[in-house]
Image 1 (cartoon, rainbow, N blue to C red):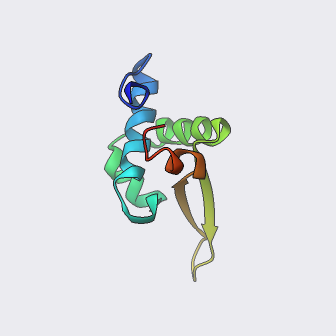
Image 2 (cartoon, rainbow, N blue to C red):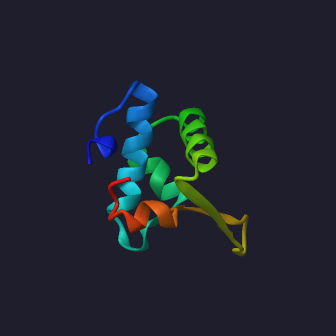
Image 3 (cartoon, one colour):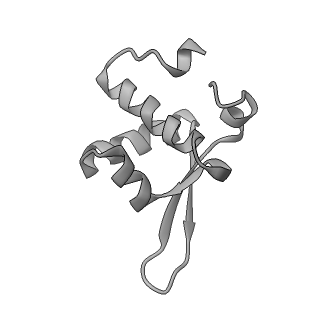
Length: 87
């Protein structure tokens, strides 16, 4: 449980906040624009978090076709969901 709340540095703390936002919604998935607004951070830092969390296997990125540009969605991976959101 402490692993979900204790950060080694400020960037890691923001990554934990990112994961917490996903844990708090149904299906543990949010659209890019929604999550970016909820994180209240700049786009460059947000992209760095997405890249880091995807490479660590903490999140999956899904794209969906729309009439405009494709939508991006971020979802917790199965491993984090199985642990009851405490991973």
